[in-house]
Length: 70
Picture (tube, rainbow, N blue to C red):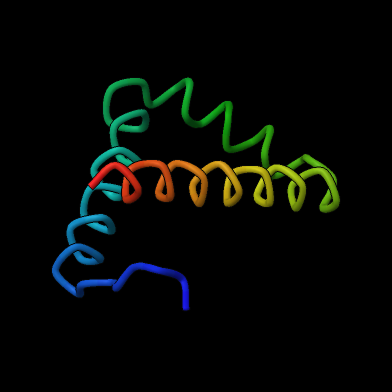
């Protein structure tokens, strides 16, 4: 067992917060967001996969450290 229980309300709040943060850059800086999206679209698949992998690892480590402090 992972040592913690996922509460559906917490999961919903996390997804909602993710959507808020995800929408900040396109809302505040639409031209910069467009340039970033074009750069991402041109990035080779292996590089994009590694970027996604490291993002997931960082998220898991952050979640672990936050949950461990409770």
